[in-house]
Structure formats: structure tokens, C-alpha cells
Amino acid sequence: MKLVRKSGVQLAALVITLLLLPFITDALLGRGWVRIADFAMLYIMLALGLNIVVGYAGLLDLGYIAFFAVGAYCYALTGSPHLALAFPMAFPDGVHLSFWIVLPLAALTAGSFGMLLGAPTLRLRGDYLAIVTLGFGEIIRIFLNNLNAPINLTNGPQGISRIDPVRVADVSLSATQNIFGIAFPSVHLYFYLFLAFTALVVIVSRRLERSRIGRAWMAIREDEIAASAMGLNTRNLKLLAFAMGAMFGGASGALFAGFQGFVSPESFSLMESIMVLCMVVLGGMGNIAGVILGGVLLAILPEVLRHSVVPLQQALFGKTVVDPESLRMLLFGTALIVMMLYRPAGLLPSRVRRRELGSDEAPESL
Amino acid sequence: MSRGTVSPVGARRAVPLLEVRSLQVAYGGIQAVKGIDLHIAPGELVALIGSNGAGKTTTLKTLAGLLPLSSGQIHYDGKSLHNIEAHQRVSMGIALVPEGRGVFARLTVHENLQMGAYSRNDQHEIASDLARMYELFPRLAERRGQLAGTLSGGEQQMVAMARALMSRPRLLMLDEPSMGLAPLMVQKIFETIRDIAAQGMSILLVEQNARLALQAAQRGYVMESGSITLSGAAGELLGSDAVQRAYLGS
Image (tube, rainbow over all chains, first blue to last red; front, side, top):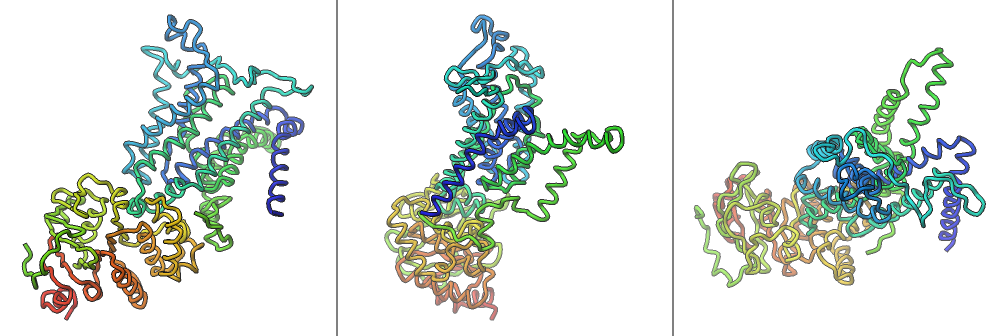
């Protein structure tokens, strides 16, 4: 009982902190950092989605960003004037579906793409699977880059702009809104939207982790032969993992498109897939809190560098010697090597890894 | 087809639990199993012995549905297993304890056992079966919250066996249960196999340790490079010159 009350208080404190975060950030660091926090939230959702595939089911996916792209383009096409270019007769003003209709469709479309990727790769594991998923990610990006002819579906490298903002109860999130006399700038509004979705993704992830399906995924990760000898339908379970992970990716993609108002293939490069994978690995594969921490760290680090490296070099050498972008990769690489050497299970290892050290007796229930 | 049947195995029972006819399996481009026949009567403990690479593991994996067969028939409980997938065979009552045990290293002992009951959904029965497994393997009861990967080899073998039993099999297939275990632990595992057999379970036991396997079994098959070369009552196989020379080193 006491424990419940304590965790209840902690939860309330966490919620209040998160609700105040955009205002605190805005006051201390400036509005640009609220935007960075919004992006961090998108990355967390992506990383949690990838965690299902990599962390639970143990399927190394290097093309995960493709599902993010699919979701983003779903909303970009159905929530912008763009389709007027391709089909002027059918859609003279483009298509402007409500975000809330497109969101589940984007998730489902990305989920089907997940199955599409999963089906031919069922027999592959480890590095072979990684190579095929990497190729898949690139194929999607290249398609987006080139589907501007013969029919201009994606507008190619220029991307699609003027995407409708997300509206909640007919209130656009792209403009400052006054609620109870408090002005909520757009980035704040999106922060709360993303926060709600992140919370949802965390809850779904937790439920999955403790479910029969979650445990079956982990069994497949541990030993696929033994898992199928135990009566697990490994084929369907792996497809389900791909589809579930992809659905999370697709939903975040739609959110991203609404938030940015613009998408282009450039946002979905291999580097982004690797970033998301790094978040999962760095934080602690299979552990939700770890993955969130990884997402926050890796989303913020480049911004910290961008804001500190140039002024620091200016002060020290009077000119910019190293570009922050290349420094970012150097630091990522170093961080990963150090992690693999000293904390191979991640910053916050999963519950199982903690138990490996014998400190946590799990409450068992059927 | 057998080069020397030591003794006629008595009249075949009307419905063997498992009946394999001219089974051929190609694995990685090689014909690993070259047309074998074998059967297991209900309640029988049958040993399949032979040296490394004889095709024993391939045979078991094929029976479990983990490898496709190239020709031949497998009948279980009077029904053909043609086109029946591995996970469906488990719910039909065929359980495999894979070679090298295959425990789920980063799941706890308890979770491993729960996974064994994946094909079932009778929650109450599962709970009482779990309790029975902890009775059968008291060592596992002590370590139920521990990660299976941190257990000793013998304990992992216990996990693998208990996990297979959790599916309530009618046919239990064990692949090299003695592999890599200390002699004392081997004794213990074989005692348990005898106990399980005594309760009426049908068991197909694959072993390199021919003496132990034949001592426990009622009947045995000797496999050599993909074919069954000898079969008969376990006691007589143990006494036969061919087996003595080839597998018992005397």
C-alpha cells in the first residue's frame, strides 16, 4: 500500500514536470529547445517501436526509418494540396483528410509494409537480416526520391510541403492558442500532443512486454529452434513483431509530417535508421526506460554540440576547425565503443539483465 | 533393410504411437537420412544410438517438424504428419528437447517452463503442472527466479526437460540429454528419464552414450551414416558383438 502511494506520488511529480517542461525550457533555453524536445519525443516513439523488433524479438532491422517515411508520406499525400498536381481532375485542391483519420491509416499502411519486409526475411537472422532490412530502407527512400514521374506522386527530392497542421477539436496546433488566458505557442501544443502519444506508446510497449506474445518474442530471440519446438508459431510471431514495430514507426511518421508541414526523402536516410538503432542499443535493448533515455540523449546531443562547439572553437582558435556535424559522428562512435566495452547491456539494462546480477527477484504470475 | 536384426521385436502392436516409413531427409545438400523405418509403441522407451553425424539429430528435428522431409511418411497416433507444422505437432503431443538444450537464456527458469505450456490454454492445469515440475526437479524450484542461462549444464538440461513436459506430450523426444554433463549429473538425468518412462510416457531417446541409453530403453535402433543398421530389444543390442565393438569399446 505504502509502495503504491509512493509510486503514485512519483508518477504525479513526473507528470507535472513533463507538463511544465515546455515552459521551463522556453524560459531557460529559448523556444528552439522546445522544438528540440518535440523531436526528441518523436525519436523516443521511433526507438520504442524499433525496440519491439530488435529488443524483444531480436530481429536486427537497419531500415526501420522506412516505416517512419511511409507514415509521413501517408499524411503528406492526404493532408496537403500536393495530389492536385498529379490528379487535377479528381482532387483540384489536393486531399485534405483529417489527421485523425489518416493516423490509423498511416499506422496500418506502415504495418503492411512491415509484413512486406518480414515475409521474405523470415529465414534470415543476424547480419543477413540486417543487410536485407538496410536494402529495404534504401529502396523506400529511393522510391520516394523518384516517384515524381511519370505521375508526380511524391514530388521527388523537393518533397511535399504545405501539409495541414494537426487539429485537435478544430483547434490548429500550428498557431499560438490562448487557453485559460495562457498563451501556448505551436511548439508547446505539439509537445503535449507528442507527450500523449509517447505515453500511449510506453503503455502499449509495457503491456506487450509482459504479455504472452512478448514472452514468445523473447523466446524466439533466445533460441528460435527451441521456441518452435515449444509450439510457437515463429513465422507469425516474427511477422507480428515487424508489423507492430512498423505501426509505431508509421504513426510517428504521420505526427512528424503534421508537425513539420514538410517532408522530403532526405529525412529518411540510412543515418536516421542507425540513429534510432543507436538509441535502442545505447539506452538498453529491451528496456523501455533505457530506450527512452537513449532517445533523449541522442536527440539532444547534436543540438548541444551545435550550440557549444562553434562558439568554443571561435573562442579558442578564433575560427571553426571542426564541423559540429562530423564531431557528432565521432562522439557517437566513441560513445558506442565505450558502451560496448563497459556497459554492454546499455545505460539502463533491462529487468532481465539486472536479475542476471541476482538483485531482483521477479514477482511471478501466470 | 536392416543388416542384422538381433531378434524379432515381437509382434508389432496394432497402432504404434509413432511410425516412420522410409524417411529420407536432405540437409544442407547432403542426404542425411537415407530411408529409415522405426516405430514407437505407446509407453515405450526407445533408444536411437549411433556415432556423431549418423543422422540422429536430423531424424528428431524432422519428426518435430523443424526440417522438411524429402520422402517417406511419418504417422503419429494413426494420422499422417504430412504438412503439419512444428507448432501444430506440439499441440498434438510431440515434444522435443533439442540438442544443446536450447534453454531461453535470458528468461527465468519459471518463464522457460511457462513457455513450454505455450500451446495450452488451461490456466489451472498449467499451474498444477508447474508445481509438479518443481516436485520432479526440486533444484529448479530453488532457482525459479534465476535466468536460465546462468544455470549449470545439468540444471539447464532439467529446465529443457521440464519445459518440454509442460506441453503435456505423449511422445517425448530427447536429443543427447547427457551431452557435456558431469557423470553424476548424467546419472541423475537418466534416473529422471526412467521415472518419466515409468509413468507411461513414450520416449524416443537419441544418445551417443550407447550403454546408458540401451540400459534405460526397452528397444533400440542403431544408426550409421543415415541408415538404421541394427535394431532390436535393448538388452540384446547391448550384448551384440557389433554394438559392443562399435559403440561400447570392448
